[in-house]
Image 1 (cartoon, rainbow, N blue to C red):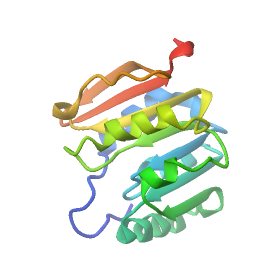
Image 2: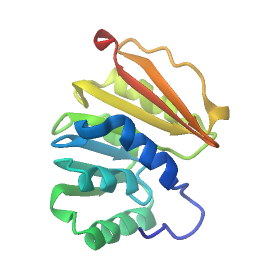
Image 3: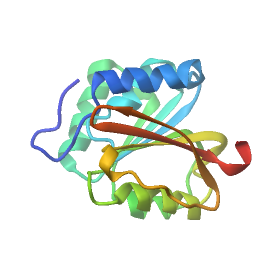
Image 4: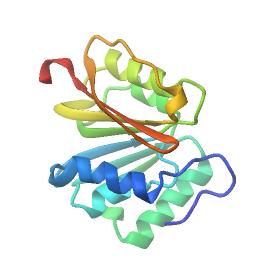
Length: 173
């Protein structure tokens, strides 16, 4: 997997990625994933390699978009993927073309961007399938409970300097 040149991204470690997909398990097969603030695209690419049907990668950094495209090409997973250079927040305001079974949010650290993302998905419906999960990757120091109308936190896992926080629709508790 190629890295994004510079220091603009913080890739998920192999240990955390393996743990994430052990939690998701075989439910990833035939699913769809939105990899938001996608960086290298490694989470969405891993999902595709494990049988996901479709992945949408969104990043605002042209270097990240180029890296994602190269990584998809190198893994021969281009046909089930779409890569967009876009501002994530502006994109969320749009009506989605489809629902996603998984939304993976791994924004730049220490800017509370993850909280804004969760709040926007709470406000603009149609992005997450009824049984889907929204998963946030942050530094543990960033964590705060987020009060939303539609989503509830149902799990969180700490791996060193990475915290994964899992949300689903409140009516699926």
